[in-house]
Length: 358
Image (cartoon, rainbow, N blue to C red; front, side, top):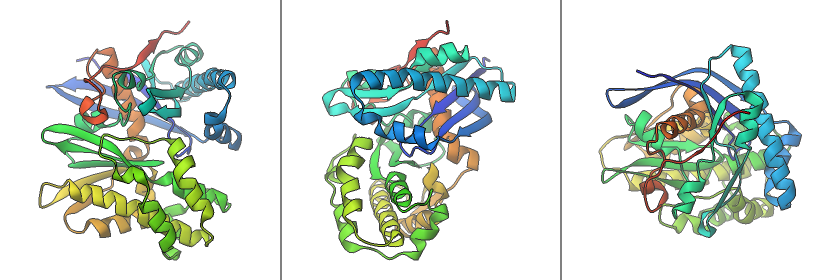
């Protein structure tokens, strides 16, 4: 039995830092198993956060330069993690950071040069997991459902509340997954605009009251009416959501309260629409799982039909990094790691580009 020793590296739309998860992954009796051996979160400096957030607006040459420098930085962080924990590592699987995601135009781009990561860390790298699926006519997202299917199949639904909310579940014996819509991206934008780092446990949101015009505007966004498969990126937030928040003249408590209700209404509607059992389980991960007020409101809207399951802090924070590690292993093994039932591509694919250190 071969055990793959691999670091999953993830930077998400919520911009809460770089996640590194050192995992042992192996297959036994046709079932994939894992242990997360060590983890590290590297918070972004305000300068790095701003640069990542604004990368979408960079001219082409500057974007390509940042692609390389960010890749070098990723490699340095991986190397430091390996040395700090004295890890034995075979591979690094890096998601990179999405700057452009327009699958309807056949475009997706994640910065963080794999060659620079490999050269800096001295470890073989697998990255660029989305391009192949988009080339096959898919959304290139969400990618996490392959991990939900192979590692977290005990749950009826897997919900990730990162910058964006996305869900995956089995429907007619096929894995289905899609971006539901807004999650922490709106909450984080509002709190930072008001001078707070984040809303710890949803304490500010809990004090607020609903702003009905804002809630109506958010609930009326066209994306929510589209059928799945569907996905969104930071561009959608900038173009569609940010103007609604900016136009709302109200207290930070009321804006956050309204945003939480919006997230819960949209998530609950999608989950309840797809329940097929009298009692289902919903695994919730991502930063939103730590927002106590949001989870309470979501359970209220789900009622007794669906039970929310909050896993360990490690799984909450590092599930995506773990799954990109799994995707890297599947790429090495030349097995399917992107599901067309999820992305809408012409066929399943084995995606990812491999870079050897020089």
